[in-house]
Length: 226
Image (cartoon, rainbow, N blue to C red; front, side):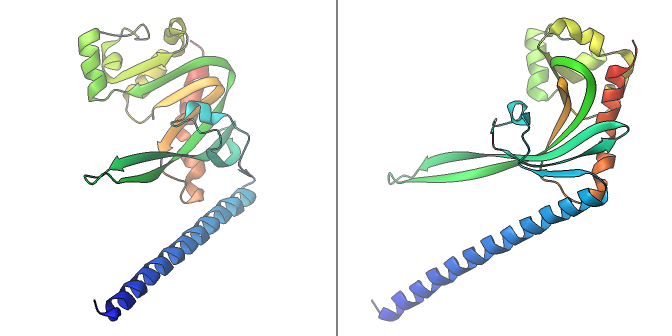
């Protein structure tokens, strides 16, 4: 085999390695700039920026990674203390080839966590819009003990609760109506923290306060007199 083939191959490998290193450096620089932008926004708007906050949100999040909350911004919206943070966890998978070789790959999953403080301390409860499997399971097995007994709601949403007997007291008429309107997100409540979890990462910080609107509305309805 011509020696030039080995030379070309070596050059290609070196070039690929160089491009990979450059990509990593650029990615880290952009991430640093993004975090600096969030920190500057927090200072200008009298919010608090905290890297690696000592929050236990991870216990309620996918993957349950105790070191997964990388940053948080805290302030006030609608008279309520609020926080928004970034969370991630990594999954690893191994595949085997036909020749018996194995390869391992990993994927990091990113989430944005929105938290609003409510008065009092509540047992765990969450509400989720039903998917196809949930609707099918309901058709087979019927409703859980957390169902409200109101078909338009029960067919569209499922509720999980640590104490099922308190669900009907929590979901008053106005909260049910707002949830059925379709503009409220899936949410969970535990202690004094009302939480929404979304896939992705924080983008332009100027829109952060407005995005708390639906969750603040849920908090107001939870605390509204029955």
